[in-house]
Each structure stands twice: as C-alpha cells, then as structure tokens.
Length: 252
Image 1 (tube, rainbow, N blue to C red):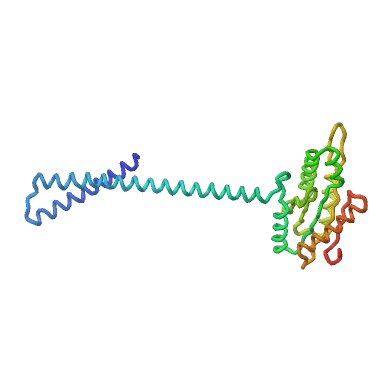
Image 2: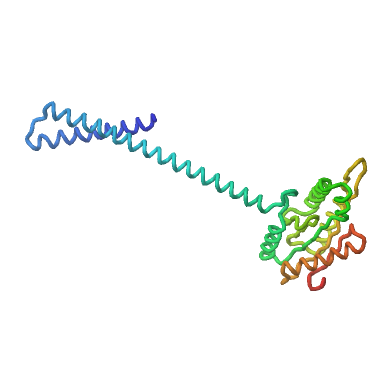
C-alpha cells in the first residue's frame, strides 16, 4: 500500500508541475492575469485528481498482478497434481513398480529408441503354496521382498514392472546376451538369499526367470512369447533357474 501511495504522489506532483508550467505560459499568452482562482485551479485540481486517479490505477494494477500470481500458482499446483496422479496411475499399488499397462508402454517406447536389449520375465516359485499355507498378507510380504530383490538386481535405467500377480518383467536396455545373463542370475541370487521368517520358521523364496535378447525386428508380443517359453522351461526343469536365449528367431 505504501508503494501505491508513493507512486501516486509522484504522479500527482508531476501533474502539478506540468499544470503550473502550462498556466505560467498559456494564461499570460492569452492576455489574462494570473489571479488566486487560476492559481488554485492549476494547483489543487491536478494535484487531487491525479493523485486519486493514479492511486486507483496503481491499486487495480497491483490487484491484477496478484491475480496473475495466484493464477500461475494454481496452474503450477494443478500441473503438479496431474503429474502425481499420472505417476500413481502408472504404478502398482503394492510394489510401486510400473503396472502391466505402463510397463509394456515403456517397453514399446524403449524399443523404438534402441534395438538392443533383453526382456526377462520373473515368476515367484510356489507362490500359491505360500498364499494357501500362510495367507495373502504373508504372500504380499513375500512379493514385496522379491520386488526389492529385483530392483537391487537390475541396472540403473532398466525398466521393471509387475505384470501379473506374482510375475514381474524387466527390460534391460541395451544389454547384450552376456549382460542379460549376469543380471538375470543376479536377480535370481538376490531372491534366493532372502530370509523370510514366518511363524518361527524361515520360508525359502526363489524365482524362475525366462528371457530373450531382442532381435532387430522383434515386436513386444514376440519378445513376450519367447521369454514366456523360456520361463516355462525353467519351471519344468525344477524352478529357481534362469534360461535366456539370444534372440526371438533362435528362441522359436
């Protein structure tokens, strides 16, 4: 408010100065004497009117600036809320990983940028037995431990998601066959090392992993079918195994 007062005062005195200058020039030029009435008119009127008008104008300007600031703040808060909602909608509620739809969308986007990489499908072994024997809450705890182990096993920049009840996907961006095998084995080992105490006993947790490196023209559905086949092979051979092939064409 003090800033508005000072700015309007400056305008008022500037108007007074201009009015007095014009009075001293114009009135004598027209052959009229400068009397008390002319002095009052040329001083009081511009001083009062300019002060009031400029104060009102500056006040409205400040209100408009405040409204713009509030609007910008509201837009920023709305954008942040939209980002949070979008992020929440793309995540699995329990593990915090990408959900199935978001994982495959990210996989599609990554495949468009780079031909190289490997897809792993990771499935918890004997998970139904855990649920049936100890309850779904215990099963959820087991899944959270497995999800954490997968996050420790992958590399920075890899795409991971929960794509089914006890099934996870990991796309290893730019990975070669050897790199993919190392990451898959690291994940399998991280899960195997978990100590999961339930009812005064330790329940073993393991995963089976099927994977395939990307062929140059392979689509996401082709990669999924190939990785699924390798996962079923790992299950058939006793579980707690990793089976990975070089590309879709050789895995067929």
